[in-house]
Amino acid sequence: MPSLPQPMPRHHRAGIRTKGWAAWRGPLRRSIGCAGLAMALAACNLPAPPSDPGALATSVAATLTAAPTRTPPPSATPILTPTPPTPTAAPTETPTPGPSPTPTTPPLAPDDPRQGLDLSSPHYADDFSRPFLWGEWSDAAGSILRQGEALVATDLTADGYVGWSTTAVQGADIYVEITVRFGPCQGKDAAGLALRVDPQSADSNYALEVSCDGHFRLRRFDPAGVTDLLPWTAAPALQDAATEPLQIGMLVRGQEIHAFAQGEHLGSAQDPALASGTVGLYANAANPPGVTVTFDDLRLWYVVP
Image (tube, rainbow, N blue to C red; front, side):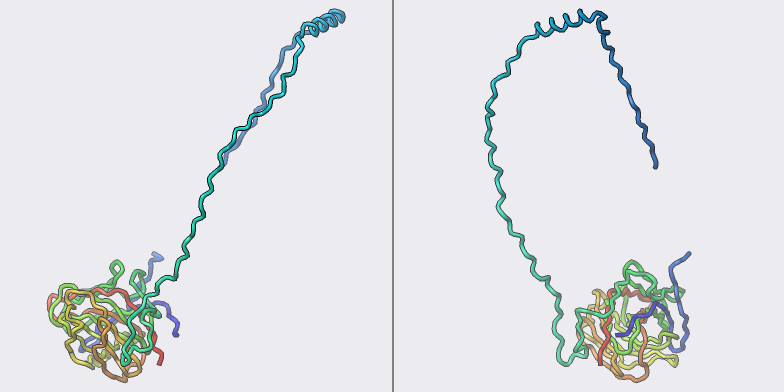
């Protein structure tokens, strides 16, 4: 499986004539205590002994005579108080956890172009929570900016030009899914997913566009202009595009280009022009005052021939 290069995001505006620029924005590299020991000295005042030794002997004898005789008490027999036994807790059984359920995806139809891919386990995923993985830009024509945990693309001019942003992940034969949500939109205002974007010039790619009114098309962008490989086509899977989040997908394998939405295969085209590249996202306004599209939860699979 190809290794993932370091991020080199780009963005590009392309249309009937092509103009572009690269964008890279990186992060700004813009007790002591002490103790004392005191010693107290105590003094005892003892009476002085008598000076006459005889008197001392007489005094001691008198004291011994006067002392009472002590009789030891009878030895007592101890009385033992019984201690109630400590109750022993009944052993408890610790349940053994069973295996965690593994999410499963519905099996693919035998004729599904994605046959052989494990759609529950992508090779790469991006929830847009990490900064600096995509080119970000803003000008009078629109913007693409990471907002929260999403990438938000806005096209303010319905002039046939689009501006896209790419990330560093590259591949020749790949399948990519992403969730898109339209802001206020109408007609052919569209969201675009581009594959095989030229990683150096960013001026060519294959693109899937889905529109606000429930259509899709496949296109090729290159320095000579834009070619529709599959014209606008209505798709029942896109009928709620204006109001509901959509999961769209695009597969490129050899000369094949396939479009998907909500897990359904929408259509395909063939073209030999572009061999490999990276991934791009964009908004494409067809009507004033423009359109905003939010992208989230990108997932990518490498397709093994």
